[in-house]
Amino acid sequence: VQTAVRLRPFLTTELVKVQVTSSPVLAPALPAWERQTSQPSSHVRSCVEMKPNGHGVVLYDPEKPHQPGREFECTYAFDSSQPQSRDYADQSTIYNCLGADMVMHGTTGYNCCLVAYGQTGTGKTHTVHGDWQTQDQRGLLPRIAEGLFERLASLPAGDTGRVRISYIEVYNDRLRDLLSTSTAR
Image 1 (cartoon, one colour):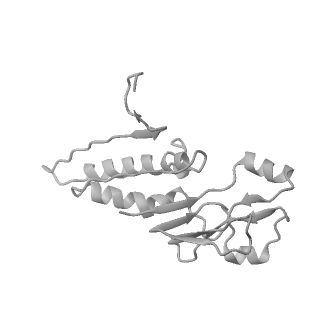
Image 2 (cartoon, one colour):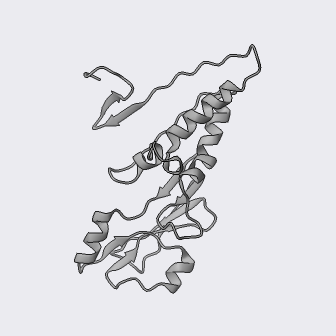
Image 3 (tube, rainbow, N blue to C red):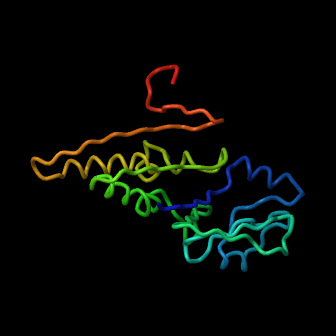
């Protein structure tokens, strides 16, 4: 079992809210080196920090700036909040760390499961799907599918593989089969 956290950038609508409000607003995390040198506006404060070892996050309460943050450990902590950052994690990085192992394990007889969990608007769809039409913006799902079938195609003559895929959404305590062609789902 591996766990990963991905920090996404602000959405355009969130940036507009930051510009029009005068009360403290949650801001995307800044790496420690950038936090020390940048001068954000007085009403924007960072509430998330990616740990430098790449295996955890620290959450800060913007209402209590002098209180220490709460630390959480995970297998991977990806910072995708600022493309110009030296630690920026793009779709390819996410796949190389998570998806490539799933392909390898899935083609050597192990069952694999990808679970994306979080509130609406946190970036799950972008991480899992991405933009299927753009090579560098494809998410985990199209990359895993491509890697899986490429690996199966390269099996020695006479070897076979069987692929079973489920794609399920759990929303408001209801299960929905996203691969079903039925309108009832």
